[in-house]
Structures are given as structure tokens and as C-alpha cells.
Image: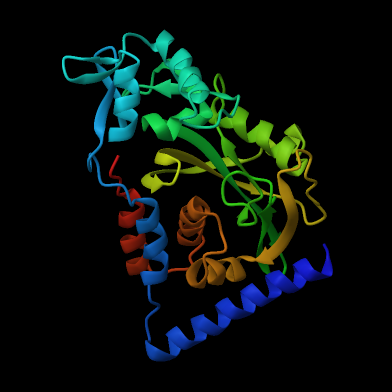
Length: 302
């Protein structure tokens, strides 16, 4: 790890600890507001909130902005005051058309589109997901090391070349669920690509939670489902970035991660939710605090 990167992370942790000390001096009870603000930030969308329903056949699958509705109307996709496509087979061609028209930048990666029952009804380019306001799924994996001094957490710093939140802190392994994959397959794929974790090891990852949120973002409406996993890693494990999406890796005490989430915005927005869930399960909050945070995490405006 470069010296400047060590100093950068050390400063962030020290700043977080300093702020935490001030809060604890003022109150005998930990203040949950810094954690709740992350949860609220990821649930910023109030639906419909000026958006219009987007249909596939007779099923609503998304929410579109007034600007997108005009784009769809120009493509002849408005009938009887409803916007949508006739079948799931029309979804991917529509996403390609919108990319060609400059509505969004294509990711060249298809994602499955599911109905309310969870059945796959079609596919779209990944970049079209927030434009059409359809739900997307992904995985986040906590890479944990049980050390004699306490639980440690592997974290990553995102490459500055990433489209979304470049340079932010992230999970050791996280990624969207590409078309045709399930959560377990995605964990295995992303673990190998992002951290060089062999399949024999990544298969030990344990599913622990499923989180939802609906968030307004510059790219559109994010309605995400996060499949959360824990993986206990050996003490001698060293991650290797194989796909160029990670600038550096760091192994830090779980208590330092707690302080960073509480007192900074250093982590990518949705990573905070998964870490709060981890802190709850690892006993870093009181029972009453756990109840408040669990209820907040369970909220969804989607």
C-alpha cells in the first residue's frame, strides 16, 4: 500500500474517532442520527413523486421521469395514457434505442428485469435501469478476518476510473447481478474478478441479509435489492485486484469501519447500509438501538 494512501486512510479514521469522542462526551447514549442519515439518503425517492408508471404488457415494472416519458412517447410507446412495451422481448431493444439517442451511456452489460413476483420477464442494458426506474439486484460481501485482537474487515478503495463514486471506500467484493446469474454465482464471479478470491474460498460465503432502497440519483431512480454475504477469510489472505476496478485494499478493525460510517461519507452510499447491518449483527449497538436501525433498514419507498 502506498504511503500516501496509508496516511489518507489513517487521517480519515483519526477524524472519525475524534468526532465520535465529542458525541459520546455530550451524551451517555450513542447518537444514531449519523447512521440513520445514511439509511435516509438511500431512501430519498418518494414514489411516484412526479414520475409515471412504466409497464411491460399489463404489469408495472418501473417509474419514469417526465423527460423520459416524452422520449417514450416519441417512440410510439404511449397508449391509453400509459407508457410501456408490449412484451419483455421489447425491453432490450428499447434500452439500446435510448442509448443510441443519448439518453444514457450504454454499459454493454445486460441485466434481468423481474416482475413483482420475482420472475424474469426480459432484459435491459444496465445503464437503462435508473432511466426506466426498474429494480436491479446486486451482491455485497463483508470480507472478515477473526484476529486475536478482534474482528477485522477488508475494504477497498474504488478506482478513480469508475463511473459511479470513484475513489470512495467500498466492500472487498460487490457488484451488480448480470443477466442469467443468481446471487451465489455473482458472489463467485465478483470475488474472483475484484479481489482474486478463488471459487473454493468464495463458496464459503454465507448469505446474511437482503436490503432494499429507492434512491434519487443523477443517473435516475435506483431501486436496488442488495444480497448481503459474510465471508470469513484466513489471516494470511491478501486480495488482488484482477479487473482494475480497485485502487487499493485495506484491512482495518471493524470498530474503525464503525467510526468511518458514523462520522464520514467516505464509503460509497449503499455500502453504509450493508455495514450498518453488519454492525447490528456483530453487537456494536444496544438492543434498543438495533430495533431502531432494523426498522429503518426495513423501510422502502419502492
